[in-house]
Image 1 (cartoon, rainbow, N blue to C red):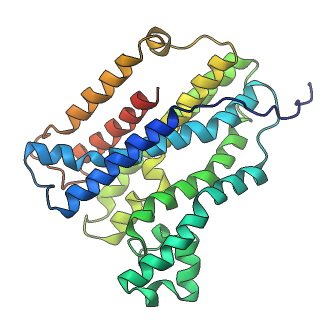
Image 2 (image 1 turned 45 degrees about the vertical axis):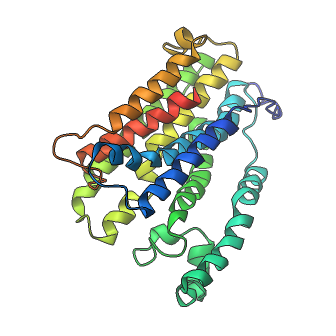
Length: 299
């Protein structure tokens, strides 16, 4: 067996992704404005406003795409996978400095010093661990639950990439096939987590919230982005794009139209369920749809 070549630095740049991030940030910003103004009621307009949190799934899809692509590209090139040390340093320097500055400021403003500035609180909140303790899951900066999931994904991605390299594959096409099969399995696992874990808790329990604010509950959205990474890396390696990507390669407006149509679908009232039943059958449906909106915007 040939020895793996040295890592070939990836020169692939995706400048338009910054525009996708801007869209995601704006939707989250306007969602919180609508929430604090009390606009999230049960009328049709408020249901659309209530789904502006679609920005979170978009961010997760983008993370799955950008972070996994170097790993799968290295595998297709028969090169060594990206080194864990530099990868960890890049991830840490991207989010830790700003968060560690913001957390003490918010803690003092909210008057929760006794909760955060304790030995266990420092480890929990500064270590992005609050979503794993039922007593702190909504503590500190409440919105930082997304960062906790991101940090967990950063670590899990390395383990996933190491496991993916062990999948049987004789050539690039088999690598792509097995990668997509594995990611489809991850997607299904995540949806089943949402369907099967939620009924074990009452919606008012913190255990219910902790089960849903976790990486397994959002792994489907990361998996979608990782799937796009596999397709992108395979195309860069000269492989044929799968349908519908090949058919739509020269028609990006179709993806944009699909994203708008899917968002319009989110505003429909499904049965008797409104936006307040966040992890009902309708809520899970919306969760999955939001992930595919992220795919359409990123594709």
